Image 1 (spheres, rainbow, N blue to C red):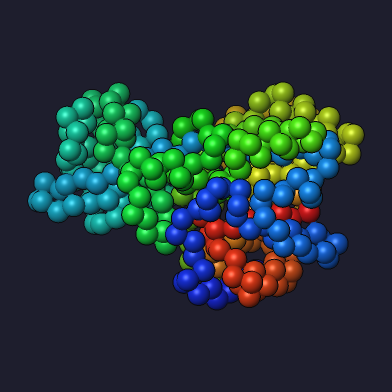
Image 2: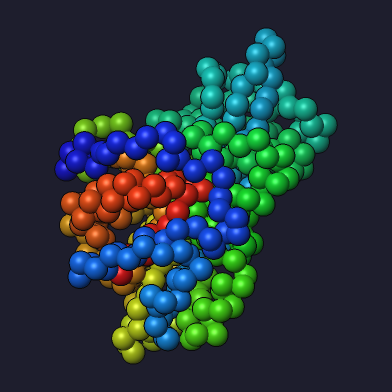
Length: 343
């Protein structure tokens, strides 16, 4: 499947630079696969949900994974921590040239130095070895880490405010390098309002990795390699999903990350068992969804794996048609942008 099939033009002015305030005042584009479309606001989400619907959310928490280090030669290098590996090593993305054994310094007395190892994790990442300082890595992240917002967001917010803005209100499991942005539209008040209507919320964890934002650089989508991500789905969540399925209730995923977590473990979950481990599912048009009946999502980048996932649920032509309509109506796009509800 040619990646160019998922391309579209978006003027730069349509890229949201900050979230709506309040969060649930974002616009909402509702699309039913039967053909109906509605334009509304996220605070009216309950109008399109029914008693007994189940919303599954990803409660992962973004950690300040972007670090800046100094080479021994004096140059500055940017490091994006991805996930811990074996022993004292972390997988990371590096902005700049590095080589095997190269040491860098941090402005943190608990972790003053680290070095890169020759072994690469995938073609785009390196391993960085913190050696004897590995037990102090949390202090380095807390003191020197920066929120890893996407490069198309040029925020002037102080770091502490940015850490709050780029986080869902229900996040509590530390480990993501990107926010599950569909969840950014929820407020505590809206969640309580939906629960009062009879909407059930289930929590899973999928620590969002670099696969979410790495561009697809090859012509054929099927040849793209998805970066593995850690997922944790408790047994009781699996059992509640089975119960909802058996009574005919809709399972609606809040975000593509939640969708990947659920669909990657579908066979296990439908047997009533949870799952903990890594997943690397790549959902393309033609995929038959086994768990979800609906999806809340943002508007995604052209030719991205996330746009391909939405196209798998809604259909490629319908998806691109909706995007064109959203552009014509001046919706806000990407991480801090407006939302879609797909049913």
